[in-house]
Length: 102
Image (tube, rainbow, N blue to C red; front, top):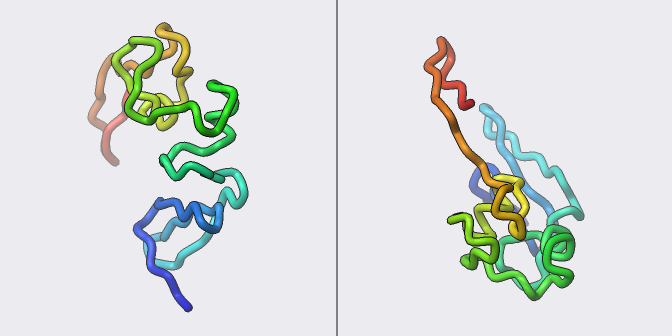
């Protein structure tokens, strides 16, 4: 059976993240790193690291009050329990092949 996934999506039932290249060839990476027992979209390992349990993290909550939800803290690789740990962009620089974020 073949499954179709959007590029960069996670399939938490198989603990894998799938990505397609320009030729639409699919590959799995990070197998086993993305286990999500409660199905909230945040890996158990991250929840355990910051909240001590895979069930204590609410994706939309902002326990450190910095304006970023737990889900966005996970995506930005910042600490959801430290208000000083935030993703900030100081400028966007146009370049020949796209943009550089600083």
